[in-house]
Image 1 (spheres, rainbow, N blue to C red):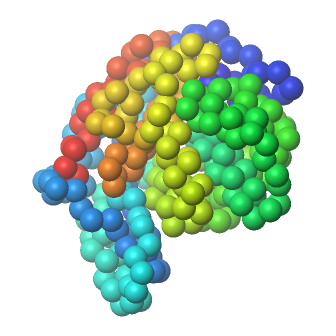
Image 2 (cartoon, one colour):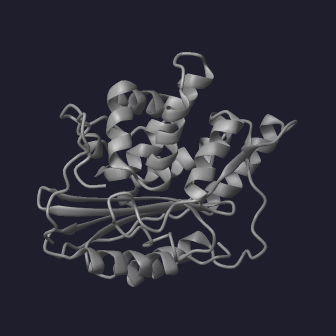
Length: 299
């Protein structure tokens, strides 16, 4: 994904230019209250979330700014009492580790395609819109291969700004807003906290078939994107068998943005990064690879 411009044709790709930024890393273990409970823990329970922050920070280094969220995905459990749900939430909250960057807005680049796809599927499910086979094929390639022409067409035809607002309202995403410039969908802003919360809540907010479709497309992401960009960075190619969405964009305010989110078993991992445009894609990707590798598989 390059400029995120939703015009009748694909957004143009700005020439790569690249420089170091600095700053930390954020880790947030999120929990969903109400009648939702965390999925069963992975076989290994090893590292507490609080211990992950320094290791991920150190692994990423000083290439740029990195925001990280690691959390458990949620599922609805029938018959769970409110007291039991509150107790489960308290246990999850007690293990969280976070930092101020969890709520720092980043331009989404192609991360917004997750919000767009979920909302189009939701509207189709409720009968508000009718999807053709071509529409569904566009949704799939937009997620699997991060296809920009498909995203631009869907954004225009299904009112992408409305989709962002609708998803933010239904999922409770306080730090997510549509782009200020019409049609510049890659300039939608979101936070690592919001992206994690969206993926945590996806199995319980979306219709089960729609959640399965979106996660299925993420789970079959193509190594090379439609525009020829290598998608195997960060979570993709580092953590085992992830369902992923990748994003990249240059150069808003002289910055490159390289993002990677994924669901690995019952864990959600969000990596949002920003480097100066003088830092090349290869260096930015290598730093994100190192950060992803520092997330323990048994968290």
